[in-house]
Length: 82
Image: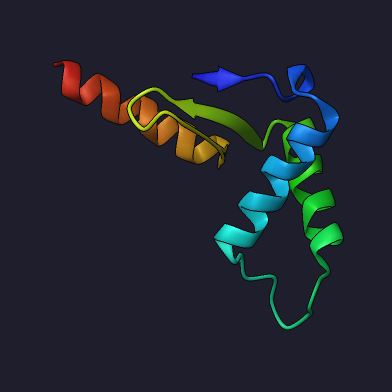
């Protein structure tokens, strides 16, 4: 289930993004970016719709996923229902 990021408390959203950034270990190329910079990038992705806050009822957890990951999850769900 998608949770509109705008509905989250500012500190909660920041902590969620920071946790995601630290967990993902995303490759940013040869340049090193600060945690703050990475958090800002993910925040911008949320604002642009390229990423979203996702609650997994199965795992009872919240994470951030890309729009493509969400589409893949939807496709997988439809496949399982058939």
